[in-house]
Length: 314
Image (cartoon, rainbow, N blue to C red; front, side, top):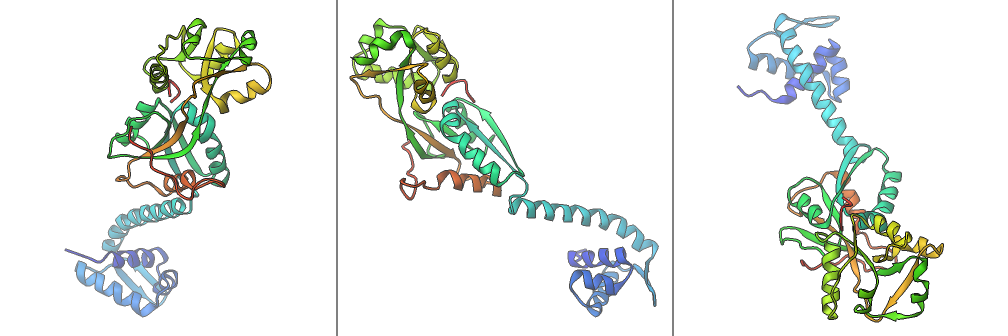
């Protein structure tokens, strides 16, 4: 048997207020329409739901039974409607993001701060991943999207959009100050202790290839798990390291580190957004994604798609 849900909705309000006129007012309808709908419902269910009187209506035993079931469903539907409304207006909601250490430090953290200030009701869940792990998390549907640092290998089923480029610098502790006035070659760096991320990281692969392209071999003396660790080790005079310039500039400005210069040009890298365009996002995630891809002053009007090519490595 099919009964129009609208009849049940009207029944709920009539039973709740025990009055056709009050129910009509709440529903924005008129009393004759409400009465007609309840007559139709009783006819379809083949039972009497109300006892009518001049003072209003009371529920029959059949009406009481139906109301006990309908009331629970009506409350749940109202709650769902309110949640959807709050989500649509960004009063509530959640976003799940996988981010590399570099992406978080030099780009994502500031964007998150801005978004959270504007939409404090949105819950944020940030996963700490390497670039390959972050891309896999998107592919598996574990996160809404990922913000990573290149190089990165992304399957054609996913989209990768460049958010901002960045470059890296070679830094050392104060004991290497004398080298700052020279231009070193990559081959010369083999004479000095080097600090690098682990062999499984994309950054390590990036510099391994960079050295090979200039007939040199990368042989780090010390491996670190994160860029922050590398900076601490550099400050402690354990060696030289390639690090993102935005993460080193404050320590360079304070004189805690010195920047060394190479004859070879270090290729620039990028912070990129990776997402599955086949998977729809909730309102909050979609809004934040739009914020990330919105062109900043001086930047192109639309981000370009990068070529297909949380803090353990990046």
